[in-house]
Amino acid sequence: MHIAWLGKKSPFCGNVTYGREVTNALLDRGYKVSFLHFAQEEAHEPSWPDCQEVFLPFLYKSQVYTIPTPKSSKILMQSLEDLKPDLVHASLTLSPLDFRLPEICQALKLPLVATFHPPFDSKLRNLKSSTQFLTYQLYAPFLAHYDKVIIFSQLQRDLLIKLGVPAEKLAVIPNGVHTNKYSPGISYLKSKFYAQRLFVYVGRIATEKNIEALLKAWKHTNMGFDSKLLIVGDGPLKPSLEPFYGTEYGIYWLGFVADEQQRIDILRGADVFILPSLVEGLSLSLLEAMSCGLACLATDAGADGEVLADGAGIVLNTQGVTSQLKTLLPLFRDHPDITQLLGHKARQRVLEKYNLNDNITHLEQLYTQVLQQSHFPVLGSLF
Image 1 (cartoon, helix red, strand yellow):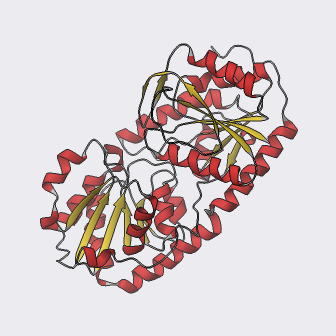
Image 2 (cartoon, helix red, strand yellow):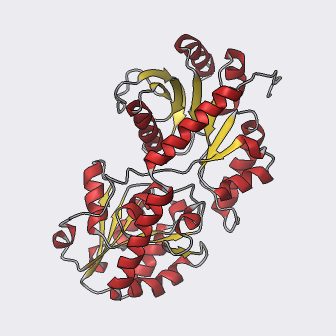
């Protein structure tokens, strides 16, 4: 089967990781994959082995959204006509082109699957979540014209149904982790930082991640010399936060770590993973930490609370994160038995529900279903 994948290769974000992991898994299973993405032909972007690439011109792109050039839809349509794939899978890039895809694929008689994964907080408890909710409201009428829409959680499914997307169009296939690769193992990280207990955050240093709530709690809690907090990632807030939360408080800023094995080594050396986000989709960093056997604390933003439900971790409310962590941080410092128990439960949850190998099998089944049921009614203009 030939899959035309429309996604992102840069800048680095969850969408990029999702596209890389899924397309590599499909290639390993014998699929032919063509990768269509926004890039300049002369740009030095990371390469996907064994994938034919198509470059779509753009005016602007960021980790959040993309603005294509007026010619991009014509180039996309011509490329799909030349490639003749069996199916198009769009990992939606929050681009105006997302809204044209049903028209384009209907004209070419190509089945169309989307993965829709903007972050959200279904309880709408803060300004950031309200902004993200507008994205869901904007996309819902168009998602109804895709053959299938993959989302990551039951919460996300319920939200889209409330916004008018037919239930039969939605398929819950979560993010997945290579559980053999992301697994508990030996690490010498603690000796490097002279630590008995290591706490870690992995992600963007941005407003929606609410990292200052964690930093404030750590700074105002006397964690002692033997406990250290590692901040792994980069982002717009890093220059304004780092000077006020430094090594004098046991906080170490490691920046963005590109090497995957190094990231795994960091997770294996840590005891506790903390994710204080205001909005999320389904955090791959959280799943990776769980798979490595860390005790995990995360807010109930997006699907993260669903992942940690029923004892697989500690679920925080997005309101009052600092005060909650002031209580919990000393508890996890002083009771390694609790940390070990939660780490074991986290690993088991990933093995049961978030194993990449199993989730790719579910994706294959979805492809087969879409191809068997594909039909092409006249949609009319979407504009």
